[in-house]
Length: 266
Ligand SMILES: C[S@@+](CC[C@H](N)C(=O)[O-])C[C@H]1O[C@@H](n2cnc3c(N)ncnc32)[C@H](O)[C@@H]1O
Picture 1 (tube, rainbow, N blue to C red):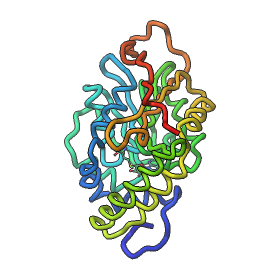
Picture 2: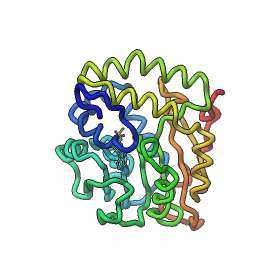
Picture 3: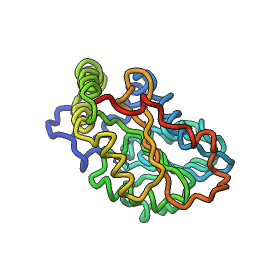
Picture 4: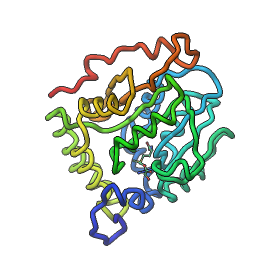
């Protein structure tokens, strides 16, 4: 994996171990990425929840950047934050969190065994789904964990539908992410995996269809600003069964149409 001197390529079966080796430098690296935290907050807000005491699930929480984004959007929530990497979780646990936050060391595929049970009022999966071996099974599990009508926000890179997005992504990787990551950590394996996994990941259309096949409804896709425009997206969907007067859903946020620039330029 990604330990110094290792030449074995990272893949979906070794990605959590790869994150173990990079956990200590993770916050510094993402902190140098303009918009990283703001975009996570945006994806959390785009779920459009309202109300207090929400039960939220952060899948693939890493060092807690997405957990913090959920709390920023929905203060006072009960957040269960799950990650397969013990070292990434260790970094997360060191931070100050309000009482409603609990961290669970588990693969998302093993949540039952880890005692994580729904229903949740919302799920955020930031930069996780691309790393799953079986994405359809992962999405099906998310659907089961949600309360009827509750939203999922999959925050993810997706460049396949757009030549311009692919070019931008490959340039950012070649000129910034891979050299900077390698310099900071002594190993480039995980950054090369990042580049490759994003290039190979579903396009916006394919992933939206995948969400729909998994049983989600009201699927919407919105992109970010900055260099991440048409590169990073919030894919939103809801478990069917929303009552018309559901108090959890903020109609003002939920009814915002995907802007024209949320559709990739092919
Ligand atoms: C790129 S990090 C994202 C962390 C955080 N969500 C953020 O936005 O900064 C991806 C995380 O997903 C975790 N991960 C990968 N595969 C996983 C799986 N099958 N189950 C749970 N966590 C997984 C990794 O350990 C890693 O911490």
